Length: 96
Image (tube, rainbow, N blue to C red; front, top):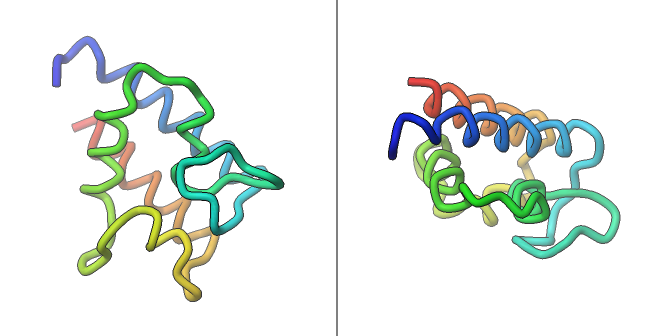
């Protein structure tokens, strides 16, 4: 990834994280939310040009053994704090 795109990626991750803080829910994948945002729709609705880079950072931030962002978000034991932690790890990775 080019160095000049890092700030935009971090900004978009922070915007997605704020959406999760305000209204998180399970079950939407990358589609527009009905009542809240899942880990993916929080970013998909942003219309970001950095979607592929952001997606890669979120994938790298997943806890070991998790097959996908969508499944992790929708897993019965996953909490809002888990998704916020996912975003925090992705932001840290993007800043490195």
